[in-house]
Image (cartoon, rainbow, N blue to C red; front, side, top):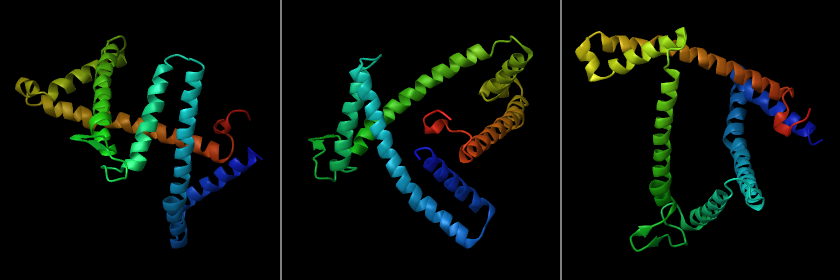
Length: 219
């Protein structure tokens, strides 16, 4: 029953999610709207609670077993507790019963987001830029015909978008834009078609009960 009931629910919800795209009847569309606006929000709320509980349990076990980098799990748990208390009782901008300001220093949720999470996100994307540059250096080695074409196309695009490209030739920026608009878009569409077909295949396998790894493994 632990496996049969989830499989039946997935089958029913999957079919209900497909039908509105095939049948434009007002009753079907209204039912689909109710399902998406009300039912999915309730399911998402329960999923959020389960996800947070699972996150805390995983990091608690990591601390208990002294696994690699277990000290950072303490940072996550303490931060989670402190931010949860501030968010629940301090309000979004310090409008709750919990005082979230000491003099000119504010630590409400909005201030924490703007002064901690946003700079951390900017730092992460800055590090990603260096990783992308390193990956591009390794990829742009002319070891094969495809790599040589990639290297030549990247050279023309980078030169074409700079003011230097227009000084070299007035046709160079147009050629760089053509590379971005035609070959690049064609490759992106091919990748997107492959991704969509993979998503459809995986969704059908899950709906029909062929793929059951989401149940925790086994048959």
